[in-house]
Length: 373
Image (cartoon, rainbow, N blue to C red):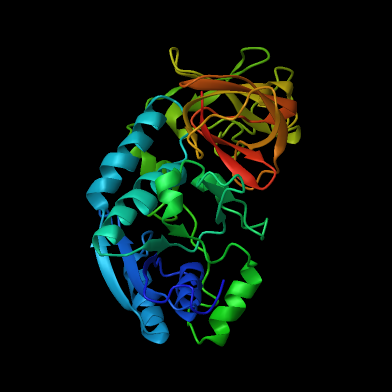
C-alpha cells in the first residue's frame, strides 16, 4: 500500500473506541484517504456503564478522532440490531441451540447496515479494525477473497465468513498484516490514549455481563432434570436448557453428587454437558473432558454462505473451524447442496455445538461456511 493510494477517495471507518479501529483509521489517513469515523450505537435496553460501555467508548472515539484529525458521525442501528441479530439470537437459544451473534452481527450490521449508510454518505470504501485480509482472486475473475490475518492469534476471519462479494469489494482491513503488539505500539507512538485499552469481549454490542442472568430476562426459567448420559441417573436440576451449551463445565452445580456407592463425584473427573433432550427438558452430562460422547466425526451445516458465490467442490481436503481460536481441523465436504452440507473430519472434534458456526478454509483463504445443525 502506498502513501497516496486513497487520494481523492473517502473511506468510512467503524470506530469502536478500541485500539484496533483507531489504528485502522490512523493508517488510512496516512495513506491519503479522506477518513470519516463512524460510531455505531446498537444496544439500548440497559445502556449503563456497568455492562455496556458505549458512553466511554464514544468519549474514546472522539478523543482518537481529535488526535488523528478526522470527523466522526454517530449513528443508531439499535432497531436493525434487534430485528436482524438479537431476535434470531433469542430464537436459537429458545430452540436449545447456541448461536454465535458476532457472525450475524458482522454480516447484518457492521457490513450491511454500516456499509449501506457509508455508501449513502458518498464513501468509496468502509474499513474496520478486524484482523483479517481481503484481496482480488488470482484467477482474474474479479472476485474477492477473505484471508486470514498475519497474526494467527488474533485472526477474526471466522467471524467474517458470511460476508459476500459486494461487502468484500467495498471493505478495507488495514490491520491484515500487523500483529497486535505492533498495533498497540503504533497507537502509542501516535499519542492515541487507547493504546493500552483492554480489548472488549462479550456479546457483540451488548458487552460483558453475567450471561445466564442476562438471558433469563428474555427467556424465562424452565426447570428440568440433569441426568447422566451413561446410566440415566438423576444428578440434579437445571433452570432451563437454553442456559446450557454442549461442552459446558461450569455452572452445572452437580460437583458434589454421590456416585451411588457413597463416594462424592467431586473428587473425580468434572462433569460436562453432552446432550439436550428438548422434548423431555433433560440435560444429559458425562464425566471427563475426553468422554466419547463429547466428540464428533462429522457435522451437518445449514444456512450456507459461500464468499465466492459458488459452493466449494465436494470430496476435497479443507480445514474447518467450529469455534473461534480453534486450529483448522482437516476435513472433507462429503455432500453439499444449496441448503446444507455434511463435513467429515480426519479426527474427531470436541463439543461440536448446534447453532454455532463452521467456517471452511483452503489454506489462508476462508471459503465461507454455515450454521451447525
